[in-house]
Length: 194
Image (tube, rainbow, N blue to C red; front, side, top):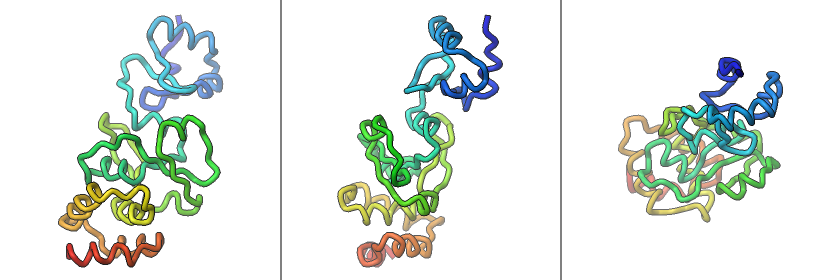
């Protein structure tokens, strides 16, 4: 009988990778037996979860790669500035980060590594797991920067909700507008709402 406490010690909120298992002396054979006895299940490439864990579609990609940050329409949804769930989630990764599965499953944006972590905040997934997502100020500026991702039906209500919020930081929007070179694009929206 396999000691499940060993797996629980190094799992990340009930998720663990094949690599972690091998590093901690858990064999592929033991994993296969646990899977057959339905104590664990495979939830992604090289990723497992305990059977009592509800699969969190937002958390699993970030368990597989710590370089993923949710952005654009997905960030609007996760930060509460949009009620519309995106058809395909948008993630931002550093330039050169490749994963065929990621490109198939997500809308992937690549940015220079030095700006990847600017404006990252932690929010809770619908299942309570921690997620890395861009702050609303960066998200609003990035959406204007990337015309192909721009959706007025999401953008205008999100900007209105932000501008009516007590937590708005106009100076921070100005900083990100400058970073993404969208000062002229965002100004008309801001003037109307201020």
